[in-house]
Image (cartoon, rainbow, N blue to C red):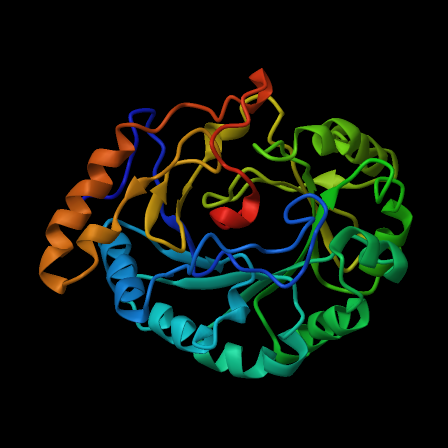
Length: 326
């Protein structure tokens, strides 16, 4: 079966599959007023998820990341992991989580097939963490990261959304942590979404500020791997962990795009921004529709743009990042 490829020659072997847009944290940059469902949401069920996974695997998907909202809020989260692990062709299973259940379930999720976990930790100061996330479970989240390291996950990453006046001055705290912890810390530039223009204007901080500090302190850019996404990864011989920078406003950021997204209600998103999604759910009701589903995926790639146009001030159709899994 032909792999997914767009008209710019980019190949897509990484699927970010959202299984819920609900979240129990109230992060300022995403859901500052908490999750508010639009009616009674009907998220993809296990059979629909299985059919999505099968179709994407047929067209070259090798890595699947389960996202939300907070994906571990689903009672069948472990069953979802088992579905991904049982999908022929999928080689790597990851998730992005706020980490509140990680300490308790890290071992069981690993047994189910999960191998990479990204935990959102926007500050290593408990008070600042609570201010940004609207939740006071900092120590519980950090215990989860420790447990994931103990269990032996292939990769443990910490995601930090850069926020001027809130955590942009906390690089020394993060560096102290990385000296002895073999995690990948990723600083992510705040991205403007449809509902957060004023917040973006107040708190956006360029990753170039962190980049300059790292280079000054002897950190060096790692060679880019064949399957790497847009992150720039830096290492230092005196530190157990690495630092990655995700700077979506930088030149040519989209040139290495290798991922697609499916929302929790079954829409294909060719980009985190720019469009409202392409319906897939009408083809997820029966195994007999797989051929038509695969054909729709190939046709959709013809619509993918060269860039997200964020650098031109276009925040696109995404209301907030939880709506399609970040």
